[in-house]
Image 1: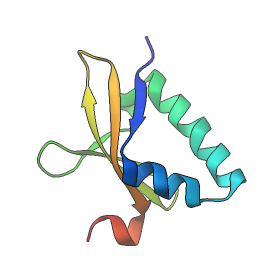
Image 2: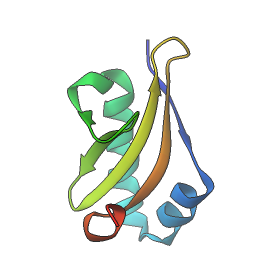
Image 3: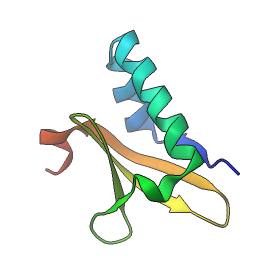
Length: 82
């Protein structure tokens, strides 16, 4: 069963600021991730996991019970860890 992907306000804002072709590549990647999240997740700090998509990073919360991936922070690699 696929996981549902939800975006925070910040993640949505950043996503919309990207060009259409980059948005399309990210949509395709998130579609892959929703089918098998454990393949793409890396543990970060605390309760967060991270997902790498090229030079972009997403800090996420995953709920296996509810089958959701919540994208808390989504940004370029150099800015996300500050």
